[in-house]
Length: 228
Image 1 (tube, rainbow, N blue to C red):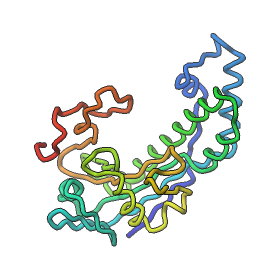
Image 2: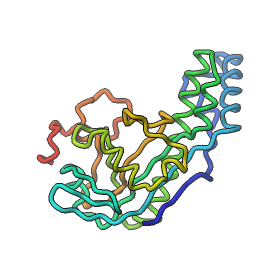
Image 3: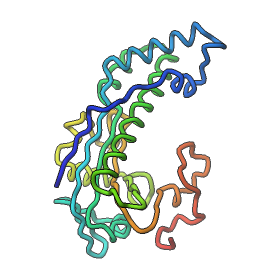
Image 4: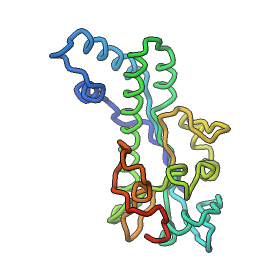
């Protein structure tokens, strides 16, 4: 398996983008905008978002899929990866530096801003990771899809254990910890599997939460993936 760690990329956060995210305007409140800009600047001095992934061979047998040396006993994951020769498990994070910095804040408004900054750093890491995975391992793929443990009932959070195992210490290398409740620290982190198939897929298609702000596709009207 080929492991890749991304920890040196442009993660600059545009001040205007940050202001839009937290609904601030220099014209409306220049003093508060200056305060927010200082919080952003302080975070970026030490922030270091990262990502790790491995390109691994895939072998599917009935309801079991083997990815590298890890065995995933899950019918849903096995079906989604049934066309694949390879896949790319990953973790992306805002970075423990930004997380540690945010814990030094006490002002509730600053903490709210910090949460948005960490989200923006996480998204930067994921954009970089997706681009690298596409160009390196799936350059000709029409659809680069993602599965995420815990996003749907079909692959619950227990899948985190197998995913972390296949990354072979990669989580520790980028400073991500799996808690006993199977959540990740820093909280602004995500894990999953990139894969290519003949059909485009989004977890959102099988999720009935139509008011989700992060929705990327419409609900298909049925949570039963076997009917898709």
